[in-house]
Amino acid sequence: MSTAMIFVGLILSTILVTASNSWLLAWLCLELNTLSILPFISKTKHPRAIEAATKYFLTQATASCLLLLAGTSNAWLTGTWDMTQMSNKLTSTTMLIALTMKMGTVPTHFWLPEVLQGSTLLTALLISTWQKIAPMSLLFILSNNIQPTFALTLGLLSTTFGGWGGMNQTQLRKMMAYSSIANMGWTVITLTHEPKASMINIFTYIILTTPTFLLMALTSTKTLQNMTTMWSTSPLATTTMALLLLSTAGLPPLTGFLPKLIIVNELVTQNLTPLATMTMMTSLLTLSFYLRTTYLTTLLNPPSSATSATKWRQKMTKNKTMILLPTATTSTFMMPALIP
View 1 (cartoon, rainbow, N blue to C red):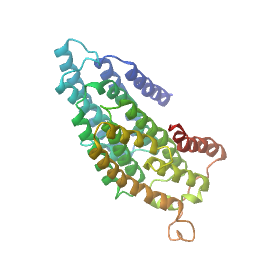
View 2: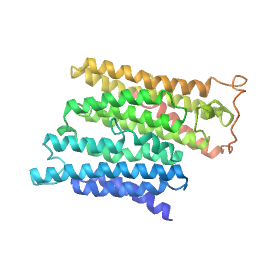
View 3: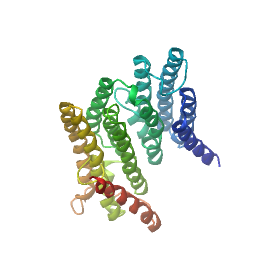
View 4: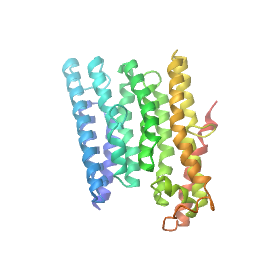
């Protein structure tokens, strides 16, 4: 019962943030959102989970302080808490830093890999997807007042460090964390020029990441070594996982290619071709560790993987597979058909 109430609070707080028009109300709902997710992170009572919850709380509290500072300063300058009346450069930049800290972009990204590694797979799913909706909705409202140069710099740094950070990871949760950082870079880089493209990118990422984490949870897969023996649980789930990883990497003609194409096209339209070229080059870093993971998942079949110990797993029930696989398959293939 208590878990259900906390989960309802998590959902309601996000909905209230997206519906609010005042920075004070948005700050209050973000605080409720932070307090609602903490019990899920620390639920296992493991020391690493407690450490992850502490790091998450301290980071979110710092971001909330910056958000309240920016909102209060803007209210003092303009006489209103209205979100659309933030024309001062200092307050808008401070607000951007606060919101990007909540989502996990460079240079305030260091908390995300450690928090995901200390959480369960389902809690990591919540942090990687649902917890980004509230701050992203506020960024969408703020997009007209953000300094373009600052946003472009944050976006390029995030795509670069996200790709480099995931290169040497063997833990899948940390790898997905760095993938999230890189994806947030793609989202922020076009926020001031085409905020709708940013929203398409973040929601596409959520659609792809959700079945990926669910498949990991159903097959008890947490490391790259586990991926080499994932076929022993469900060959069909293994194939779907490979397609999801390639789609998240942005390979055509899969779903993840569409938002990247839109963003690069928008950067070229804004005469930012060198930046678009550098962004595409940094995406190759992300592609490299996704291709490595896909190779371990689908191409290391027996007897090639005989040296890897097969991890004991509960057998996937037919109902779970039948519910999850259509969702994953749809999210992998549905959106390229929308390209005009």
